[in-house]
Image (cartoon, protein in one colour):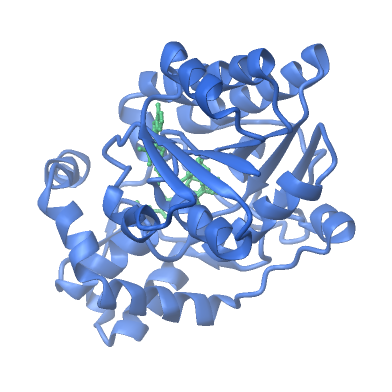
Length: 339
Ligand code: NAD
Ligand code: DAU
């Protein structure tokens, strides 16, 4: 089979490409990625050496480029990871989020209509459900939880989900959607909580925790997410949404302290800074459906995953140091300078 992976030069898409190449030796993988600030060809360096892999630079919202690629390659499966993915950036500049996440998704759906597709899979997020209160640990997001978004990012992802489901119903496209909780692991861009804290702690820099650090996220090791997507896109029911999460809830402060312990760095590095506007309090996924229908379960306990992740950042300093040496420095100053 030929699998088109959009956004594969980013964090989860890159891990997914390695997952597919390793687990499906009969398949070919094509990556379409615009190489925005979050896309990094160094992530795909090993894949580039594989004759079953091809990289194409291009924008999912560029109709002509996408249609030309579909016409030339006729993919059997499309997995759409391409997105603007950082909530804080969506607060300062929402427009590109709507363009890429919504209109880009629509262009991909139109290409599927025109050229035909075996399966279109949309990689979505638990953030489409909004948040849960801290004092109700019994509540979880199920696939039936109403969409209730908070940020321009989550609004754009929910909109994209609705476009995908509308194309499925109106044009009978074979689609599926996964809505996953927070991922962590190798190749995670160092603007997100876990890699930001690891890379800054390694340089003995202050660690900016928003508000009181009590917001809760449900952390899933990226390889477990890749395995879930692979199962759903091959065996999941058409037109269905599957939640993916690990029952690994931690407050941000717990996560940061765990990282400091792993690195042998002092908690005095923690600095509480002004909260994120509209900051979601708690995310928690009920993954019963994907377990019941497809047998998926997360395999990596948080303690093991975070240890491996810290080790990966220690062993792969050049990967993140190249990023930090670039335009990201100006970004950090802009976002945190006045906080
Ligand atoms: P990322 O920001 O690390 O990577 C995004 C990739 O998409 C980059 O390679 C970037 O160059 C590419 N891209 C951006 N705009 C593009 C465009 N217009 N055309 C083509 N490529 C473009 O993101 P990530 O964390 O790997 O997330 C991947 C997907 O998974 C996103 O759709 C995100 O909403 C979703 N998701 C992420 C998480 C998480 O914890 N990171 C959890 C659930 C769902
Ligand atoms: O839940 C899935 C989502 O997880 C994905 O859809 C998003 O693409 C992904 O970026 C992630 O969103 P979050 O906003 O949860 O992730 P982030 O790493 O930005 O923040 C995690 C938590 O840490 C959140 O409560 C905000 C907090 N935080 C974040 C940063 C960057 C801090 O306290 N300090 C920081 O500097």
